[in-house]
Image (cartoon, rainbow, N blue to C red; front, side, top):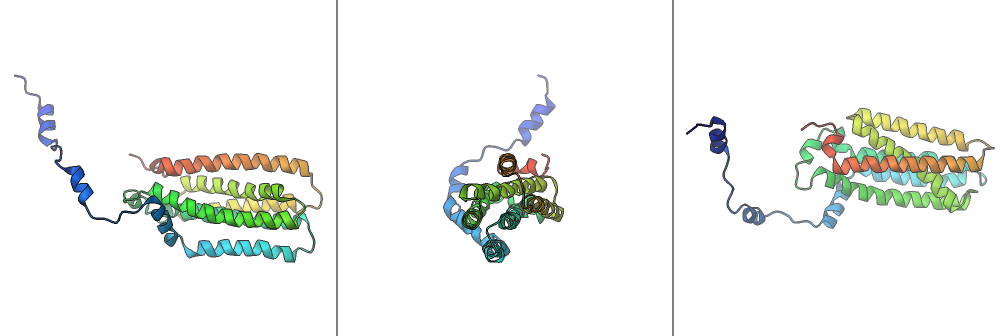
Length: 240
């Protein structure tokens, strides 16, 4: 009979199937959280500065109403220039594990890193939606745009910077990603200042441009979020 060394070694070192594994794992005592409870628990892990800066952005937008003497596009670019900061804060917060080099550890926890990211995105998304809704109402009332155009002019810089920041954090590790994201937010805000700071501008062309940029930013943001939630290892360049 022919001796197959590879086969014999494989059989010798293959561990037997564990008996009663499922029952043993089910009997381990650990806190059982529902996903709703898990999402709410993540509020405590979001840095307080995020809430503080979000509140400052909202107060600054409302305060701009009293600074600008009349209803003009100046109010539009003031508020639109502040909104990208929300996007940078959100991208930096959900990428915090990478910034501090903890994503490999968190990836093997009971609630894996994509679940943590998803929970924090839900929380921050609700917070940002509240700020954006309030800013839209302020612009709709005190600027010549109305509610619909105000929403477009506010969402465009937000989704654009969100998509760009997430793309940056997917390719640049650590604090360098934060610096580049802040630079991107500054560039988008500056573009809004140049666009809306003029006394005369083509409103129709501006609306078309804003819609195109808003769609492109939404697509980019969606793609980056999918990478974060579905392929976290590949997102950070970890090879199997």
